[in-house]
Structure formats: C-alpha cells, structure tokens
Image (cartoon, rainbow, N blue to C red; front, side, top):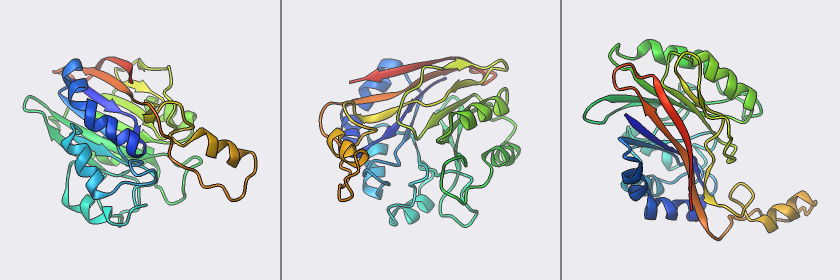
Length: 257
C-alpha cells in the first residue's frame, strides 16, 4: 500500500495547488490513498466548502488540528462526513470523530488524528493515552494504521513515534509548517517524520507574507498578518506499507512546486 500524506494546506494558494496538482501527484506516486491536513485552508480554520474542494481534488481523508473549530460551520460537517477527522483528544463533547477507516478496495487503512499538548491550547487530553484507547477499539484485521500528530514540540512528536513503534504503520507530524529531514523507519517497523511541511506559498513565513510578519516581529502593534501570495508548493511524504503486516517499508519526503 502506498500512502501519500500532504502537510498543512495554507490559504487560497495552498488550496489552489491542491486543486490543480493533487490528482497528477497521486498518479505519479501510484498512491492508494491520500491524507491531507486541511486545517489552515482559509488561513485559520476550514470551511465546509473548502473541505469539499479538498475531497474532490483527491484527498481521501482530511485531518485537522488546533484550529479545527475556527470556522463554526465546520461542526455539523464533521458530524455528517467520515472522510474528515479532527484530533481525537479533544474533549469527548467536541463535534466530529478522531479517526476513520478508509477502504482502498484491497485493504482498510485507519487514519488517526491527534494533537500535542506541549505549547498548544489547553483542553487536549493525553495523545499517548488516547492512542492506546483507539488502538484497543480497532478490529483485529486492521493492520494498516497511520497517525497525523498535529503538535508543536519536536520532543513530543518524537516520543509519540517511539511510543507507537510497532503498533502503527506510521506517525507523521504536522502543524509547524517546516518539513524536517528526519524521516526513517523506527526499530519496530513504524515510519516516522517530525513534520511533513506545508502546502502553500514557498517564499513566506509559514504561509503568511514575509512583509507583514517582519513588521509584527519588529513590534508594529497594528499589523494584520496576511496570507502570502506567489508560487505555491506541495510538501508531504510517500509512505510504503507492507500489504500483509502493515509495517513501514519506506518513508520519503516530497516537495513539488
């Protein structure tokens, strides 16, 4: 099984390049399934219309993060559609679901979405204990499991990778928008990377315009951070999983302008 995972889609430029390029990228890598983190498609949060666009453009499963509910309309959409998930360790009363099982026709892949606790908003339950809880619920025949860990601290991401090593197929980080160079297969067969990067404007500060961010960091109290314009790129990973065991065979970074 080949899994294509795309990093945080940021703003209209990120949404546009997904719409224009994702199906061709999928064909190029012969991906059986595509997972896309879409929580910043509007700059902050995701609308139901943008979620539909991502899905129609080739995202089989959409994951979210700490800005899940920035657009209030998404609450009902999360309840009504099983192709979009939010971090499972939100409070139990939060709308939506934290994992989904996608049938590729040959295999079933479970996609789990978790949020970190370190340097993140308060209110998230332990991602470690929540992962344990979900894994206990899964049918025994589900061998292929990937985790989008939406977290700030690299140490927390690294720790969860080792915690789940041998129990899931892959753990890939999102949220920081900077693609890291530490992709590898952990000792017990789980693919890991700290962050898969961002799908948005390359010459930017995490998707926002360089000019507005510099003014902010230089102390301008009135500046409004704006989405960058310019050439966008797709960042993510290609994960190959063993068809029988679900173990990770390889994990490789990709960047496409």
